[in-house]
Length: 439
Image 1 (cartoon, rainbow, N blue to C red):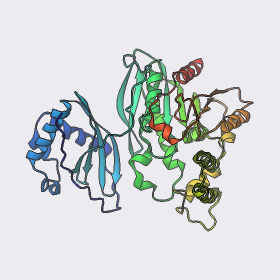
Image 2 (image 1 turned 135 degrees about the vertical axis):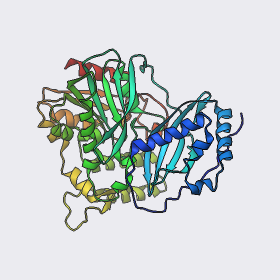
Image 3 (image 1 turned 45 degrees about the vertical axis):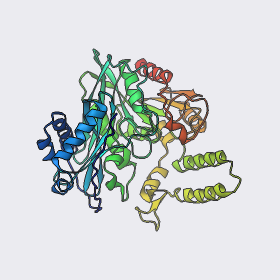
Image 4 (image 1 turned 30 degrees about the horizontal axis):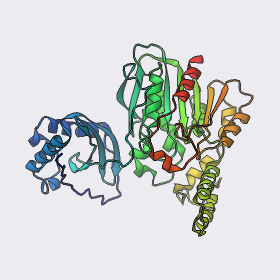
């Protein structure tokens, strides 16, 4: 097989100034560029480059690059823009490519005038490749791309709907902590993609979307809270769910994973007509308590004999304690604590998710937790169960073998476990389907 050689260009991230690009337009530009390449219209494709790139790359070199890729991987079967991210004054768009003999992703860099200033082969991950689970019967459902928008932000989304079904329930997936793509990808694992497929194969539609912190990271360099990070977009997605043709408007559900589950009662308070909320691996305690427990667990796994890890652990505990603040005082809202602004910690520390859930009257609640989850423990599950003991609409299910990504494991591991591929548990999906369909 001939080795593919790519002429790389340097994306100059020279400014912190940000700009708001039209994500849909950028995705279309990226897709059109690759469409021209597949049609061997090299002159037209070459015209998309900025002049600074043309000075380093000739049209003939572009043609050779694409010819080399085709000789190596075969002709392109599908090329779709799937993710975007701001980088200073530039915008990076990821295009997923499927070829006759393999896959290859690309990254295109665009400037303000929507000219291409960078063209890269995305490095292939060293982890195991994602595989569709056995319950992902694509003959039973369809998927289409969409965008969740609030006028200022555009987040790529996928709407999954069952075929030949009317009045089907809809589920909106809400991410855990940190930036995340629409599949909530971790290593080769894609929990939201698995869940969407498993639910759709049994007659339940869903919406999953890219988290705002992944697409607009420059907006989070100042004071913010979970409102900007999670709540606003979750509410927009729930509103979109009500517009899907064939959806049962009385059966819209929220699936909150980890932080998303912690915030699910808060979202349900703002959207009172939800059919139900699913709290998956959801903390019942303060986020700082969770971080401390995780650090303690990982420290104990090190079997530190040189006492180096102990010193790091002690330092971490001191830093974690700083995140327990409940009011600003003399601290500025944008002061960074554990990588997040003080405003974020104050907002979360003044929120009691169990108490918020206790006040909910209409939406049904399904709390699910894995025993091999080192990030959220059975203690949280028990707290949810005790706090909602008097709620007749609340149900609970504990899965001893599941980890934080909701896949079956033989033991409680560490983050390294996430680099091995394992689909979301079919048993879990069946239980969610049964719970939703009970109504």
